[in-house]
Length: 252
Image (cartoon, rainbow, N blue to C red; front, side, top):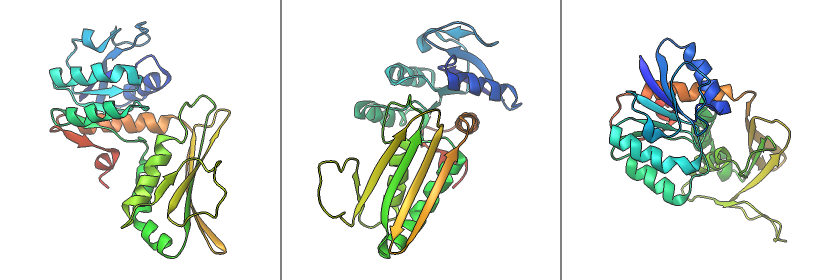
């Protein structure tokens, strides 16, 4: 049984993970942390991670970037691994995550779904073949109207997967509005749609002469990310210090 602290327990993802964990006999949420420390579930809820004194095997974080530094310090002090799902971290925070991973196990992926992580593996394999044949690479992501960042972290991770397969990485281009020129060969262009309640759709487009190859992933519910986070917590419990990803969980 993996005992989990849910960091950001009263948010939409926190409550979804709580429901999924309740149906999983191999995991139990033993405490929650939320700035709005109203008890919405059966476990105790603390306003700050520093107030939590409950024994646990892993922490699942779906809170916000402002709380990450304190969370990382707590994980080192208590030696509790962290599944870090919060996005929008600064370069300084990412450096802190890397340093923390030398002292305690940290699992961080741009996207927690199995499908996306399988797709990244495939992209690294096919990108040298298609780019060598002259295919251009474009990435389109579509999300709900409340998403703050564009392009998405997943879109960037997909581009990084494309570059992983190339001897010479392509330049990532996020804005062409000031350019009037023919598209350069070695670049990855991004486009983002924000509207409605779209959970998360990503297309990686390889456009060649008279043919187009598109790799797509569509998330119809945030539950795919919640399930991934629970599986990650079960995987991470008891692991040695290090930086892990979902690829380790699904053994890619």
